[in-house]
Image (tube, helix red, strand yellow):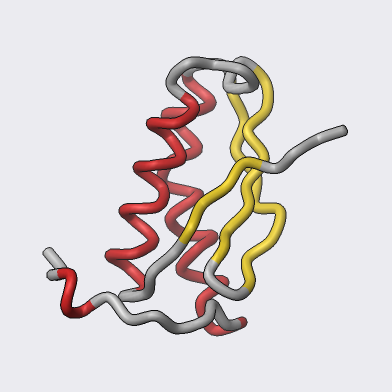
Length: 89
């Protein structure tokens, strides 16, 4: 497991997109099994924005899903990452 010292404060780049999509793909089956959806909206700077839909929308466990995604992204990318839900109007 990556230590805190190995996490860099660097911006997300286009080269990080495949890793981000791959991690989302590993989480989707569990989200979909609960009747939800998980979609990448954007990734730039230090922020990844995802849309949680279906049964995930308003679910009490949505924060857990976002936290898990954040931990996996930081481990895979070696970068400090914020994961936020998309605000649909």
